[in-house]
Amino acid sequence: MNAWPLFFKRPGEKGENKDEFITITWQNDLVTESRAIYYGVGTRNEYRLTRFGKGFPYLTDDNVGDLLVLCRLPRKNYQAYVLSADDDIDEFFAALNISPANANGLIGPQGAIRPEDALYDCFNAFLSSLRVEFPDTELLSRQARECYRAAYTITDKMVTADPDKEILKWLDAEYQLFKLIENDRYSQQIKKPFSTVEELIETANTLLQRRKSRAGFSLEHHLKAVFRIFGLIFDAQGVTEGRKKPDFIFPGTAAYHDGSFDENKLFVLAAKTTCKDRWRQVMNEADRVTTKYLFTLQQGISSSQLEEMYQARVCLVVPKAYLTSFPPAFRKRILSLEQFIQSVRESQ
Image 1 (cartoon, one colour):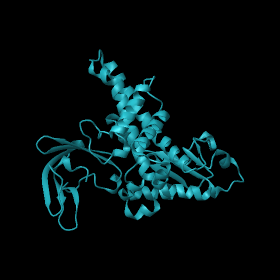
Image 2: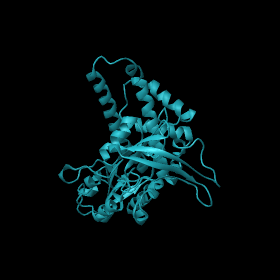
Image 3: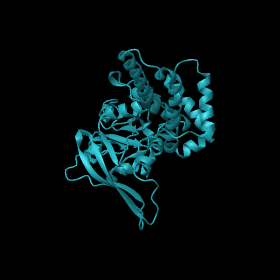
Image 4: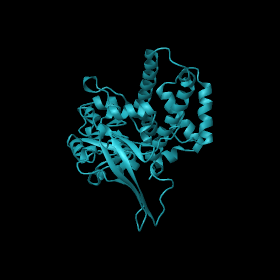
């Protein structure tokens, strides 16, 4: 529903069907004569992209959870890419400075919708107070939450009422704050010609590495804040066997290493923005815990991969709004953040 401006001059209206015939050039020089259509007649209210032809390689079950990048060109031409590997998806998000929470949307000339004035004022005040080039990731996450909560009058009670919604809002706020700081720090530098190619590459690499570092820690920082608001007892980055460090251990490292502590009351949670490839890293992080939990912002995973996860006793936790992106047969086995928190609270 968010992508209608890619194809139409106005959104579809109930009671009408409309379409546009377009040419899409995919990676590996595959070209399809496709059709963008809005169905609004009867009970339908949906947009679809159709006509990919027989043997189209990107509609298999293994492509569930891939990232589709669709770029509009002149004269009803489009360029499309399908990214499958976690590293490729993370590189794309970092290169365009997009939050994973904002996938499934449009990227305009500025990359994001302008924040509300109160939020923007809070961000600018923080920017003015900075005495370092960039704040560390924990400070950045905390400041984004504080600005968002102040601007929208979000209380702890509201967070406990819908943690799935609020953590996505926090992630989006942090992305906006990071972009503001990045533009401030580099706007003058990138306007000047680079003296050498090496200088250009060094600057670009610095930007990309900082973006990926922030994204890697962001989810963990915001989960910590949610768990503390709920009053959960946990350790972050606690050490288990072989000096492995799960992102979260409930109720903590001491309980984990206490052989007399009831194993049924131990929970281990990993946090990964994407997990199509990386979920296997979770399997051996804590030998005492049979079922490992994995919180992710990945929107959709194939049935075959989900079956493999559950056979390996890895249970997915996703924001409630993302549940519909997963195969229907698995939705009841995937937990929302609220459901995971409730299970931990009951054990404590």
